[in-house]
Image (cartoon, rainbow, N blue to C red; front, side, top):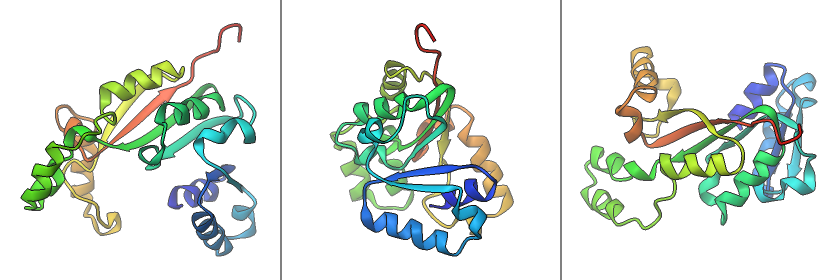
Length: 197
């Protein structure tokens, strides 16, 4: 929701596709405290990522954010294909996912050795850089660049972070080998020109 408000405050038109009625209500509530000009820039649509074709025309958006939701999808490939379909040629698809290659690190840093050991046995391993790179290419949105998010710091209040901490996180997030062991991966793919387009 913070991203929605930030983009709308900066003058962008934002469409929020949300299947959960409770989350849509939270968005409406947050928008209620905003100036009319900000509220008018936000369109709230009931639905999920796999339903994009029923709500939007192909190529309707210059930017599509899929942050923290792909892991909940029953079919991530279909969800990404639907999002890619509504992305304009040259448009950016921004995907934020947990990094399955680093699941044991955060609990280990917190001293939770049982959780760290259990993470090694976690069966789902599709949310890694290489499978996601292939998946993005397969839906016509090849990976342009990627970053690690939360390399050094666990989940927490970003507002409480000191500037040097943020600087270290930002630098690690774009530097190998650190970004590869981040808690999350931020993947940025760009839609190519469709054949005959």
